[in-house]
Image (cartoon, rainbow, N blue to C red; front, side):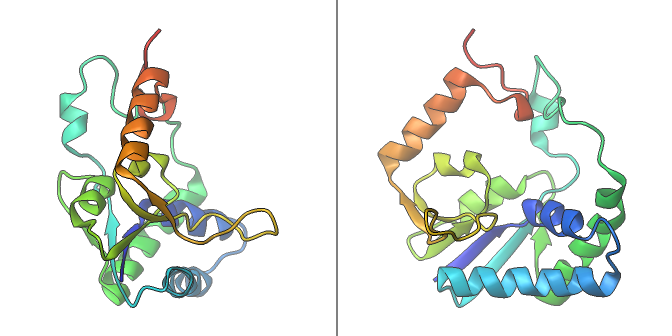
Length: 175
């Protein structure tokens, strides 16, 4: 099995965890630890890690609202650690960025019957497949095991978002 990792959320998690007193060494250790944990918890023996570029084709296509235009400016801890995290994952672990495509798009394109999509992003659950939310913590009530999303569930998730909207991505939904 191959883990297909939407690495954008890893940036936020690792940067946030190192916002007070983090060092380049602790950030790199966090990167290594996250990757080890993802592989162990999914049972995958191979991976692709994908980052989004700063702009993608959707920024040009959105006509009614700026794409992701409701997001606040990045916090200082994020702007400090993001390049270090991206460079480390890219140089050390072979993660990559595809020009003009968000990580979500690449993850969906790479998804197949022998892969596990690794991301906390609910938008990815609009495609059928096996999913692992690396943000979840195991408790007696919550399992971190990968879950399968059927084609019917994926279609339902898509239409729920179209109807309800998504303020994070500036999708209005039906009034």
